[in-house]
Length: 72
Image (cartoon, rainbow, N blue to C red; front, side):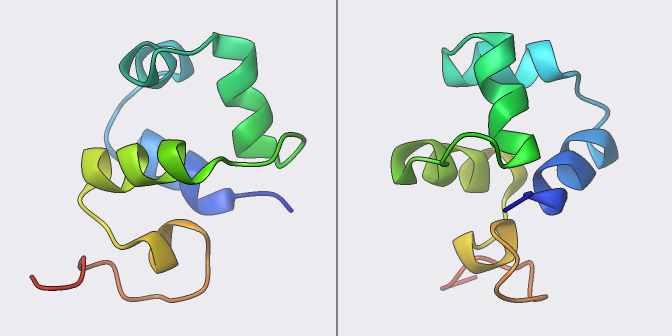
């Protein structure tokens, strides 16, 4: 499953793959595999990405089109 919204959010925030990987504390290639759906996205990484982009987890993984995190 390709996480298109991961790539879209990253580019919308003018971030490089390396910058996001550094934020997550992982290798650039590992993060690239998350975006492409080659590697399963761990919930801990998904939570950090949702916090970074200030979106809901549902939006992040493509379940919803509602960007706002719950409680916002």
